[in-house]
Structure formats: structure tokens, C-alpha cells
Image 1 (tube, rainbow over the protein chains, first blue to last red):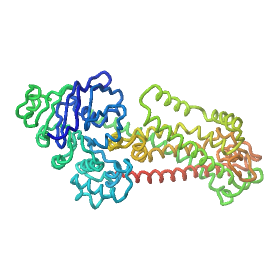
Image 2: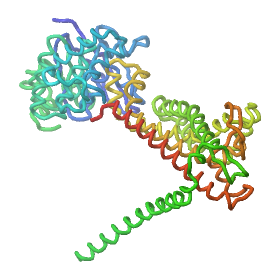
Image 3: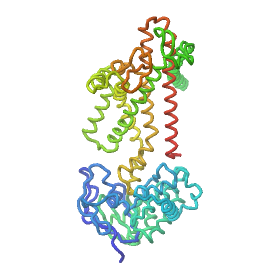
Image 4: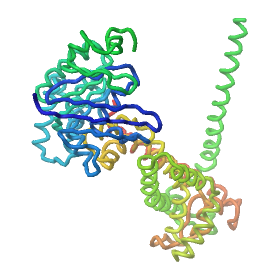
Length: 252
Length: 286
């Protein structure tokens, strides 16, 4: 068994009075892909945002229980949230490149983290875009606006941007839901390649996608982690009737 | 039924068109009127000479310089303060009574009549702080007056920045300050310039706030520093129209002054618009 990267123990999360997550016990090992599935509003994206403390940016969020990244309690008072977010990268549902050049989009994360060495930045940007399987498409127009790229290219640019700051964990919140089938396939291929070096947690509404890219799948329903197992088992032999109904398309 | 519908559509459309056209017509009429009467007064001497012979001869040079000083002075003071306040309100404050309080105070400040600002400016800058009747007292008074405009447009400009940009920045480990300075502000800046344009237009046209804070009827020479009295175009216009030694004879000069005032506002707006375009290009949206 490889190292434990993410773990939660009896994690509760409230938006005001509404309990969005109930006693979540979850863990993910190094260099694996975990898929979060479940109907809308089941808490899967909320749990994803626990791991890089993105929920902090929403008013009235209360959390109890424990969440660990690399064995460190990330909700302890003395935790450096910016450092945590460097280690736990995130790719969003809608591609959200900055209104800057393609180059600057990837360089941004380096610059805000205090790196100013030009050769290092240039190399790192190229390296990251290559890792995101976008290099051949953009190498001649790095100075052009990122908004000139297609949606799928923008999403891979956002992945490149995340890779540049060398995270060990990458959270993906429905990264392909706004993309066409061809772009989706490219992003999925990319996830598969990245697995060798990163721990990935991906929220998806697309059951086939979960089946294709993930090693483990967690099914959420009404704020509960109903079932968590190898992806194969979740789809062929789920233990809980709710999981079975969901993966076979009977509800959700 | 069908024809009746069509007629109704046509009537509504034409009413809207007529009304919007009449707005344009009024503007053209005012501009045409000013240009028609003022154009003959404009000459190199008019723009560069001191007023002479009871304002019936000479030029309006000191008033032009005065107005430009007021624009620069008030903006140097009000623009940074207004933008920083706007950033504080929109980026740092959560929805709370304090935020609502600040907002309503800003709006109330904007609702105060300009003559009251004049009175306040006299009490605070001229007397209490001892600046005397001066460019700086007038500039600060005008600056106070347009602060709400700048704060409000800054707020709106920041609010229009899609939150996904902020989230993307935070997710890369950027701090709040870095996110605001490197992502949010550059996107919002072209719209923030709108506040600058509106403010400059107001500052160059207002008479009341400078009445008691340093605008003067006549200057034999240019002000030597920011603590000197000044002439300004709107006040000069008022003087020429109502209280010159020979109002009838200085009438063309009054129209000329109005024309120059309008041209200054126009030129400054064009400059600010170019600035807006420039910053808009810096953030590569398209």
C-alpha cells in the first residue's frame, strides 16, 4: 500500500443551519484517482473543497471533525492556507484562465509564490504545458490571450497552471462537464497520465467517466458517504441499494 | 387583430425612437448654440492672455490654468482614496451592517448639495487647516465632492469581475492581496476609469464648491503655487455673465469661455477613454 495522502475523520460541514456533509470518513492513497459521484447537492463538491480549504471563501461555513493532508490536520489554527493550496491544486468546472497571455497564465502561480528567476519560469511554463498535453497547440502563440483558446484547450491550460506549482494532489471539480466529447477524451487521457505522479480526486456526473479514469469511487447521497470502494466493485457489485440505483440510472 | 398588433408595435417603436432622438437633439442644440456664439471669441490671444479692460478684452488664460489645476489637484487626492475605499468595501468586507452602513454613508455623501461642500471646505480647509483661499483648498473640496462617485464606480467595477478569477488565483496559493493586485484590479481597471471620467467632468464644471474656497473674480497674474487664489472657467463664466463691468460687451467672451470649458471636458474625456482602452488591452479578454 502506498502512502496515505488525504484523510477525513467524522467530518461534518454546515452551511449556516444546513448540514452539507455528515460524518465523512474518507481516505485516498498516493498516485490514485478517486471519483466522487452522486446526485447534485449530495456534498461531493463540498468535500472536494474541504481538502484545499476553498470553503473558507464562503460565508457561514462551519466544520467539525478532522481532515488531514499528508498526515497534517489542515484545519489546525497554525496551518498556512496558501501553502496548503500550493500542495493541493484545483481545476474548476468551467475553465477559468486569467485574462492574461497563455504564458502568463501558467507563470502566475510561480510568480505569486515568489519565484522570479526568468529561465526557471520559462522552463517551468513549457514543462507544465507539455505535461498538460497542450504544448503542440500553443507553442507558437504563448503571448496570445488565453481567451483565444477553445474551451477544451483552456481547461488543459488551467491544468498546466496547476501543475506549474508542483502540487502532489489535484482536485478536479467536474473538469470536463463544460467540454465537447473530443476535448473530454483529451482531458480524461491526461488524467490517466497524471496518475503516475499525482493523487487525483475528481468530481463527476458522468458515470462512464468515473469508470474510465478512476481506481476508486465514492458515492455520496444527501451529505453522506454511502459507499466507497474500488471503482469496478461500485459499478458491478455495489453493496448499498442506493448506490446500485444510482449507478444503474434508476435515480439521480 | 394582426394589423392592430402591427400598428401598436409601430407606435411604441416610434415613441421610443422619438424620445431618444429628442435627447440627442437637445444636446446638439446646446452644443450648437455654444459653438455658434462662442466660436468668434476664440483666438490665440483669448486662450493665452490675461483678462483686460474690465473683462471685455484680453483672454481667459488664468481661468483655463486654474481649472486644469483643480482637475489635477482633486484627482490626485480623490482617485487613490476612492479606489482604495472601493476595494475595501467590495473585496474585504463581508455582507454586514457595517458594509451597509458604509454604503449608505457613501451614497449620502454623494447626495449633499455642492454648495454645502463649499461651505464645509471653507470651514475645514480654508479656516481650520489654514490653507486660506487657495488651489489646494478648492481641489480638496472638489475631491471630497466626487469621492462617492469614484468609490461607487470602483465597487461596481470590482463586483463585475467574475468570481471564478478570484477562485482560480486562490487555488494557486495566491494571497488575497496578490489576487486583488494581479488579477482583480487589472480586470476592473478600465471600468474604474469610468469613475475618473465622470469625476473630472463634475470637477471641471462645478462652481459652488470653489466659491468660498479660493476662486477669484480676477487675477492679474497666474497663481504661483498651490496656496494661491485661482480663477476657474465655470466661475469666470458666471462673473462674465452677471457681474462684469460691462456685461453686454463681455457676452461673447462668456460664450467663448463656455466653449473652452466644454472642449476641456471633451479632451480630458477622450484622454481618459484612451487610457481605458489601453488598460483594457492589457487584460487580454479576447
